[in-house]
Length: 153
Image (cartoon, rainbow, N blue to C red; front, side):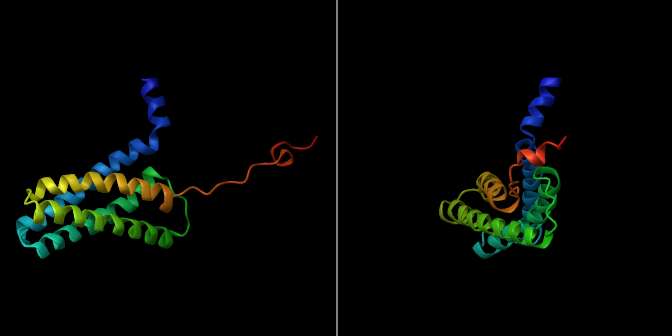
């Protein structure tokens, strides 16, 4: 059990990201399915993208709050700025996802639900990279000097 705990601690950020990413994927797919089953037609290219955007809004909102708290443990006081950066990076991956959906469903005539799963893999990996490098980047602390690290006698 201690080995498992040690592995979790060592890879906590990635493990939590995968868990949150999985839950975010569930939010995205469920909201997409609800759209295409109830009021949007995935065979219509415009309605397909509308369903995709609606699912994106639900998923990104969920992802911001859960990534902030459980994955990157952000203490940034500028929540609006951080959220803006988060949504901007997710907007970039939305366009990636829309391109994958267009290519797979509209051009290649693939089943839209299978295509959505493929698109989610691309999105999850890209989102982690953007979050890690741009949104929730840790502030680098200046190295302590000897006088700061050791009290004088």
